[in-house]
Amino acid sequence: MNRRGITALENTTFEDLEQLKTTKNELTRFMMTYKFAIDEVNTKLNILKEEFQYIHDYNPIEHSISRVKSPESILKKAYRKNCGLSLAAIKENIQDIAGIRITCSFISDIYKVSEMITKQRDITVIERKDYIQNPKPNGYQSLHLIIKIPVFMSDRVEHTFVEIQIRTIAMDFWASLEHKIYYKFNKEVPERITRELKEAAVSATELDKKMERLHEEVKVIKNMENEEQQHVSDSPMNGEIRQLIGLLK
Ligand code: 0O2
Image 1 (cartoon, rainbow, N blue to C red):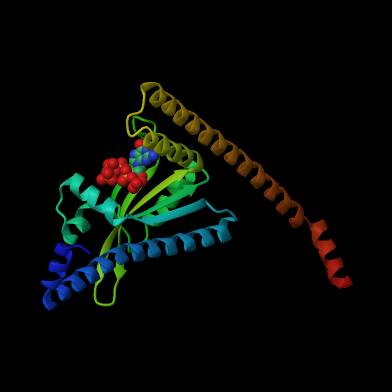
Image 2 (image 1 turned 180 degrees about the horizontal axis):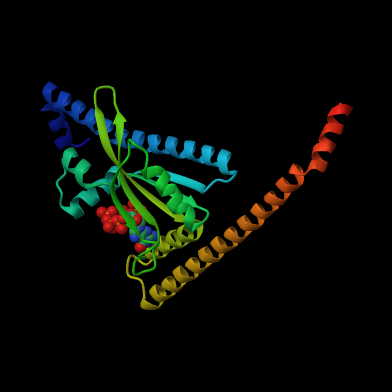
C-alpha cells in the first residue's frame, strides 16, 4: 500500500467503518431482492411446466435462463439513462436488473406462456412489447414483458421489476448470433452484414411458421386417431371382450 493509502486508513474513523458496513449491507440486500424475484418467477414457471405437461402431455417451454445484471452494467445503464445513482433511483428506472429468457417450441406457445404468467394475481404487468407482431428494423423478434412481483423479505415487501423475454428457438438462435456479431464488430456492422442478418431473421420466421403449421397438422391427425380408438373401445364387441378378460382373471 502506498503512503496515501496508509494515510487514508489512519484517518478512517469508527463511524466511517460503520457507514461502510451499512452501505455494503444495503447493496447486498438490494441485489438479493432481484435474485429472489427471479427465484419466485422460476418457481411459477416450474409449476406451469409440470402442470401443463400433466394436463396436455406436452411442455410449451423448451428451456429458460435467468440472470441478475452485474453492478457494473447497472451503473453503466444508470449513467446512460441519466437517472441518478441512488438505490431508489436505480430501483425505479432500471427495470431489467432481474431478467428471465424463456425459449418456447412454437410461436403460439409464446402467447400461451405469456398469458399464463400475466394472469397470475400477484403479478402486475408494467409493459408489454411485442417484437413478434412488430419486429425491430434489424429483424429482432421476441415478446418482452416487464412485470412487478412482490418479494417478501424479513422486514418488508419489495415490489420488484423483472424483465421476461419469450421467444422461439429460431428467434433465440438469431438473437444470440446477432448479439455476437454485433459485439465482434464493436457496434459498427457493415451494411451488407446488416442486410444479411435481416434476411436470416426472415428465414427464421419462415422456419417458425412452417414448424407451427406442421405441429397443427400433427395435432389434428393425433386427435383423429384418438377419436377412432375411443370409438373402437366404446363398441359393444369390446365390452364383451373386456368381460371375458375379467372372467379369465
Ligand atoms: P442485455 O445484455 O441482453 O441485458 P432498455 O435499454 O431495456 O431500457 P429498450 O432497448 O427499449 O430499453 O428495451 P427492449 O427493446 O425491451 O430491449 C431490451 C433487451 O432486449 C436487450 O437488453 C436485449 O437483451 C434484447 N434486445 C433488444 N433488441 C435486441 C436486438 O436487436 N438484438 C438482440 N440480440 N437483442 C436485443 P440489453 O440491456 O440491451 O442487453
